[in-house]
Image (cartoon, rainbow over all chains, first blue to last red; front, side, top):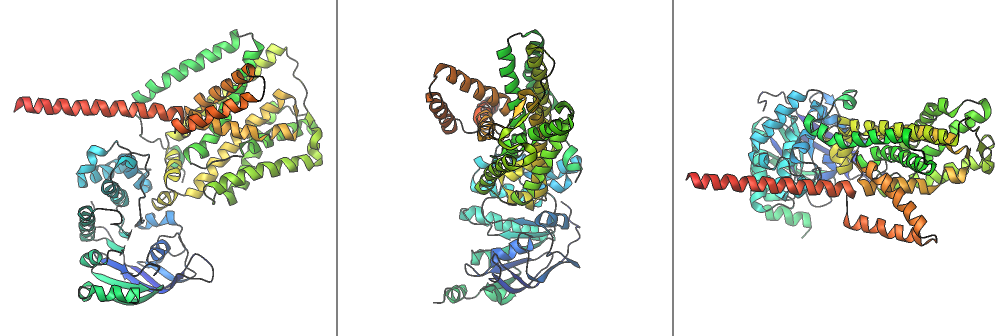
Length: 245
Length: 344
């Protein structure tokens, strides 16, 4: 793994985006995700957390505002161009290619390296060294793996092309607590490699535990933000506020 | 972008490829020999039709099998190809043998035109739209003066004996089937094939990893359109008379989908198994049961296959192979454990 990767800060400025014209889900969100940091976005259901990630990943074009990586505006880029810029998305739920084997899934993660087979093979091999438990499963279709194993394949596929910005959407959904804690540990390892991680999560406690900086969205707008230490206090009060009770 | 289409993938070893190709190459040789030795018109004609359907099913397989986009309008490209050749003959007396590539280009252009708006739509909507487009094009051909509407277009018979004609089309369609199979084989073992499979498995995930999903689908649709157009152009010369109802018959589209699904969609071998199986079983039932009961029996067979052999015959074969490999691996592990224990 390249430890001296050049990383850029991701800046979201006043973005407005939604699925139906005239009914934005995001109504002017501001956010910064720095290299070597885990930036967490929290909020109640419907706050626009996943919409935010889909907008950054190019699936949803903002009607206004800007998404800047380093010095480059990327809000108009289609999703397939983001990986070229070093931005990778781990979507919510299962996203492996179920009929393909573990190796094929990870190889496909290196799509941008397809013209350099040797480099791709080295990168895939590096993933099997990093996640050694996947090695013995390499010829199995991912659809036949457990939830935790599939998550590991997804993470290997996510980072095989060595992206610098990781957009992670609800990484622990459907996983047992033990496997979920492994996933969060892995996120910390990826952060230590200098990557910028933007994590959207419903598991408030787990997310705050790994976060460096926290943003709370409410009704498509920035609500509160601060260092993660500021959120370690009364989480129950925050959740009650979301629920309006 | 170009590297997308020419780099072979590494899914299979070279020795594995030779081992798997051998029976098919043998079958191709036997069929090529039969074209010279065979004298039964009925059999030559039936096999010619089988080859025609193999070519069409392989073409469908590119986007439908590998990409997972169910196109129920394959006959649109086939029919437009047939009409392109027929119209060029009608007004300029150019032989369909010469205009077949142009028929392919016309159908490919139509595939692109249809694909640009429709291939952004996913799932059942795409299938439905392809079905509707077939009926729309059929009505258009019925109404346009230069296609001569329901009267249809006659083509000039070839100055050959009946056996000569059957042999000619036997070889032409055999060549089409072999070439298109080769194309599909190349696609399956290329990055373009990977891209299509990724689209089939999870289109959003495919886009995230950097695949230009929309462009890949457009190209796949154009390739399918080109092949169907060429085959349609040659078909016009074979049948010598084309009219909208028969040329754009939904049965052709349905047969193509059934052949791919029963043989094994998303594999280059699937259409080679599915096309003869569906045609020969349907013919055998038609001869055995002269009433419409044969259609009901055929439908029951299709339903049973769909229920009990998901993935078609190639899917069954793959699962059997995978099961054997897993058993062998488990046996190997147990053997290794026994060895370790014996050492301890």
